[in-house]
Length: 74
Image (cartoon, rainbow, N blue to C red; front, side):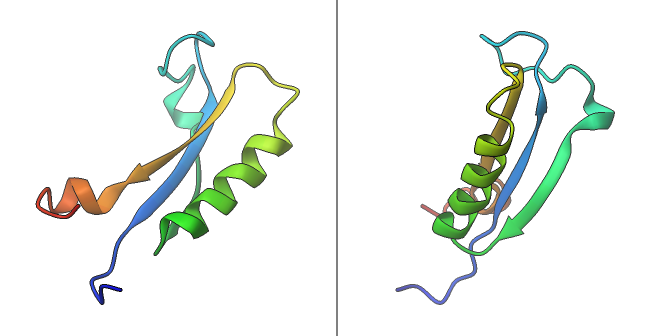
């Protein structure tokens, strides 16, 4: 296991169109949290996704921020 810190961010909100990835209102995008592992981020993502299952426009995403900060990181 690598000692290098990885950063995963979970965000979400309502989309303009269920077939797209554009948010309806960026000021309403929810920052769920920042997590050191994909597994932790996935747990948070799953909880939010399940909590909003009745809203077809609600979507949550895991952003692999460590890849944005350092593209050489796998």
